Length: 99
Image (cartoon, rainbow, N blue to C red; front, side, top):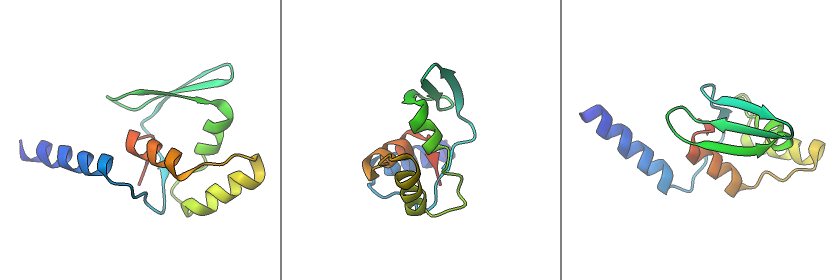
């Protein structure tokens, strides 16, 4: 009862908030299916999200050990990819990235 209600409220707050934690990590509970140049991610009991393999390899760099901005800059420099704040917020809200 109450624990479930707290969980729903916390999830709702996360979905409404535009803040992103400073340190993020890839959700270890993700089910990852690699198909050619695409990766399908399934968040446990939730949704399926498709990414290119290149973007997935960049997202996997989020392991919780480094500041989010340093990873974004590293990916920009090494891969030429721009991981925008909006994209990271979407991954965080979806449960692909977590605190």
